[in-house]
Each structure stands twice: as structure tokens, then as C-alpha cells.
Image (cartoon, rainbow, N blue to C red; front, side, top):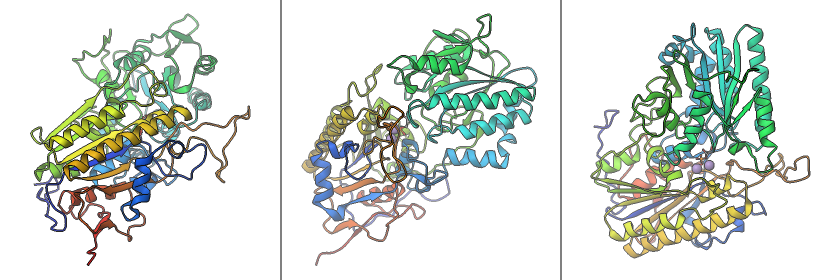
Length: 560
Ligand SMILES: O=C(O)[C@H](O)COP(=O)(O)O
Ligand SMILES: [Mn+2]
Ligand SMILES: [Mn+2]
């Protein structure tokens, strides 16, 4: 029985043959936008993706990938990998972390839950530490939520607070760190006026400190640990404003990669290492880049790096980040209860599944796809294969990333005919797009297109079916624009490069020799989103989706 009491058995759909090999290809950060010199997908040679669009208009369409259509608080919220892959895999739209935290803060329920009570136990004698991303991107965290929580924590008894800041420049413009730190310092000054000893204690850039994901590079987390917990870092400053301003003076510096720093007092002593008896909250709501630091903060037995000191703390995540590992065990807001995902259904219906990506996106087609759940549903039916990503570089240095390797692996698996579903994520549009390097992003997009061709050719050989889509936009628009769409210039007259995702829709295309004649996209689902993909894929495997899934995108029209 499914966890809601319904049966796992899917109804067979006689219109769609069973047993076909289906390739599900997710192009990370590949949206659809008007062509211009900032649209790297348009600028790149992408004959395969172009042919999907132009070759069969009834088998190509756009899907919403941002805002309320994927469970984000508003339609001004750009899409992201977590909500995108959650929707693709779960087939339903859940209120996502950003929205759940908004609601818990607005109602005050956040302060009534078990998680807050747990950290509150330390308020009388210990310090409350807040670790997280300073950003208004709404992807991993939101600055206004931090502001509200700081106030609320004080109202509820916090007397000494230390904030450990991770600078962004990836979900928001590079250079915005300075403004965020100034605003945060203002807020903390106001708390100090009220008698709360509140300060920034340490920090660093998100891609270099603390926020690694999928165990790509534990060194990143160690740098964060040393700064936040031990109070040790190569750079020491008397204030965080001085820290970000000074560190950004290096011509190569940017917010994403700021080195770790600690704030020290007049005698050079760190103002806020994490000590026995303290409370710690990681205030990001998004899971992937918090799992590693959460393990370091929570696990008694931990061997990924030398922690030197493992303070006895009360630790809570803003959310629980991994539903399978129950990590962390204490949290302030319950995560969306994503259950009965398409992956789980399919293994119950004898669909053998293979999922593959490179490290930086590996959890996207496994963990996020399965509703923020690590591990297999049934190891006899599934294989998840990770291709190690390059480490220690920014991806504009290697813009082809592992696209070719992923595609070749997928090709071999398809040709082996051992699996019914072969699911991959190709990272380039997103990961290179985040660097803001237009030339490199064009190279990355071309590599993605070549990879898609390899997969589609293999599908051709086995008489299979493909579904190619994306999780949100990124590479199709690399410039910040005003409301009329005109590129914005900075104070030196240079265009402001956009490193973040976008609000654009994404393409979805189906095809392959195994696709029954007469299958086409329905015309009655104008507002369809990523969440409609799961039911579509279930059809391609020969099943109807459960009735509470968002409807399938496809129909069969008999030509005679
Ligand atoms: O974590 C990141 O790299 C960005 O904040 C969001 O990118 P993603 O949603 O594509 O992973
Ligand atoms: Mn993504
Ligand atoms: Mn991204």
C-alpha cells in the first residue's frame, strides 16, 4: 500500500505500450527566451535541441518552471533545482521550504515547535548561532526570513547571538554581499540597543565555504567549520563590513568565492566560536547544500575531516534536510511531505530505473527527484551512478563538464537494455551559467546538445522513447534587465551579468521510435508546469498516473 493508503499498483494504459526504454533527460538551467546576445542557448550551436523544437511542433512545448507553479511563494520567485526536480519527480505541486518558512514565521508557529523549544534550552547560558546564506534569491534562504527570525528569537529569550554569514552572488547579483551585511549590521545594532549581545562572527563565500553539496568537496565544509565553530580562518577582521569590502578588493574576488574570515575583538580573539552549551540553527531552507554541514554539526561519529573540537550543542535546521536520514533530527519547520513519488511507484510496477549525473547534480536526479530522500526504494530495481565532477575549479574553466561522460554512460546503459528508465541531468547550462561567463556558457550549452544527441541516438537504436526537459532557466539569459527588458548597466557602464536562474519557461520534447503514432501534447493544458511531467513519463512506461497527480501532457489521436 502507498503511504496514503492507496495501492502502489498503477493502472495500465492500453494506449501506451509497456516495456519501452524511456530516456528522461533534464537539462539543468536551460530555459526558453528571446534570442539576443545574452541568450547563450541561442548563441551556441544546438542542432539537436533545435531539431526537437522545429521538427515536431506537436511534440515540443514549454512548461512553467518558476513561482507558484512549482510551489514557491510568489510568481516573482525564479525556479531552482530543488523545487524543479521535486515537481518533476513527484508529479504534484507542494508548498516548498521558502513558503513553509514564510508561513511559520508569519503565524509565529515556528516558535512553538519542538525545534525551537530545543534550541531555546540554551538561551539562558549559551549563545544562539545562526549559519546561512545572506541572499534575497529565495533559493536556499531569504534575508527577510533571517531578519524576522532574529527578532523573534530575541522576543523568545535569546540573549547572545552570533551570525555566521555565507555570501551569495549566485542567486543574486555579485557584489550584493556588501548591502546585505550593512542591513544585517543595522538589525544587529538595533538588537544590541535592546540589550541583546548580537554580532556577526564569521563568514565566507558560498562556493568556497560551508555550502558544498553531494560530497563534492569536504574541504569547503571544513573551511566553514574552522571559521564558524573553531573561530579560525586565514583572514581576521574587526567587522564583517570591513571583511567583505576588503576581501572584495582583490580583482579576482567575488561573493561566491570569498575566502573564510572570522571577526575578532580588540585583542584578536574570535568573537563567536561555537562552544559547549550553545544553540545552532542553519537557517537555509533548501536541503542539498546544508546536508554536509548538518552532518558535521550533528553526527557523533564523523570522519570526513578533522573537526578538532566537537562542541555539545543543541542544533536545529530551518527544515529537516534529508527525510531518509532524518537529518537533522531537530528542525524549526517541517519540510513538505513529498510522498508517493513517481520513482517509488515505478519500482513497485517493475520499472527498472537507472539515474546518472555528475557529482554536482547527482542528488538532483536521485535525492530531489525522490522528494528529498536519499537512497534507493529498491536496490534490486534501481541503480544510481555518479560521475565525479571536477573539483577546485569554477566551471567556466571546464565548461564541457562531464556532459559527454554522462551521455556515454547513459548510452551504454540504454544499449544494454537492462533498465526501462534511464534518467540523467546535464549540468552545464546551469553550473557554467552561474559563473556569468558568456563565452564559457556557450561552450557548455553546445556540449549539452551533443550529449543529448548521444542519448537520443541510443534510444533510436533500441526503439525507445525520450523525454527531454529542463528544471528552470539560467543560460538563456545572462544579463540583469529593467522592467522593459533592457540590459542594466553598472556604475562603470558595463552590463550587469546575471549569474542566477530566471523566470523563463523550459522546453519539454518527446519522441523516439518507441513512441506510438498519434501521440502529441494536449492543447488544453496551457498552464502546465514541471509537475505535469511525472504523469507523462508514467504514460510512456504504459501506465496511468495516480489520480492526484497533475495531468499528463500527452494524448493519442488516431490518424485514421
Ligand atoms: O545551489 C546552487 O548552485 C544555486 O543556488 C541554485 O542552483 P540549482 O538550483 O540549479 O542547484
Ligand atoms: Mn537546476
Ligand atoms: Mn543553478
